Image (cartoon, rainbow, N blue to C red; front, side):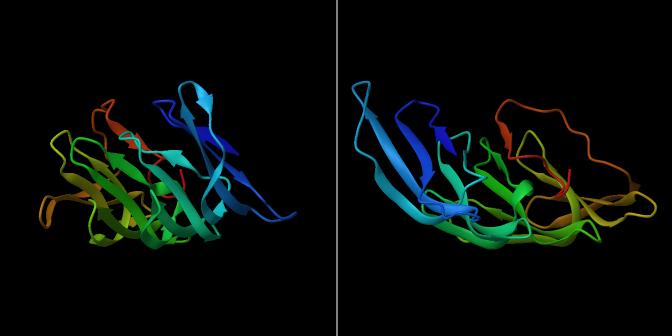
Amino acid sequence: SFTISDDGSAIYYIDDMSEGKDYGDLYKVAISDGAPQSPEMYDSDVYAYSIYFLSDGRLCYYKDVKENKGELFVDKTSIDYDVQLYSVSYNEDSKQLLYFVDWSSERSCGTLKRWTGKEAEKIADDVHDFSVTADGKILYLYDYSTNYYKGELYLFNKEGEKIDDDVVAIIVPSTSKYHTAYGVGGGY
C-alpha cells in the first residue's frame, strides 16, 4: 500500500506488516532533485488500507482500526478516536474536516464532528448524513428513520437551526474543492 503526494515531493508506504495483520509501519520517501531519498519511518502501527491526502496536501491515516472505526491522524496529529473510516470529508474553502464518531450501522447514524486545526467540535448526535454548502455551512440530516427514509434537516453555522421535517436526502452542488474520502453517510 503506497501513495504519492500531489506535488510529487514524497512517497508514503506501509512496510513491516505481520502476516494476517492489517497494520504496519508507515514510511516516507522524500523526492529531492527528482531522486528518491532514503526511507524514514513516519509512524508505526498504521492501518494499511486507508491512507490518503486532503486537498490541501496533508496526510490522513488511521490507527487501531476495529470494525471500520479507528483513531484518525492528520500529519501525525491525533484528531479523534472511534472515527468511522468512510465518513471523513474535507472542505478546503472553510478549512474544516468533518467526520462521524460512534457510528451505528443498525441505526445508520452517528455523532457528527468537525476539526479545523484545533480541538474537535461536536456538531450533533444522531446524524445520518451531511454536506457542506459553498459558503462553508454544514447541512445535516438528524433523527433519520431507516423505516421511512426521512429525517429532519438542520443547518449548522454556529449552532443547529432546523430547516424542515421529512427530508429524504441532502442535494447540494458539488465543487472541485470538496474532498470526500470514500463517501459520506457512513455506509454508502
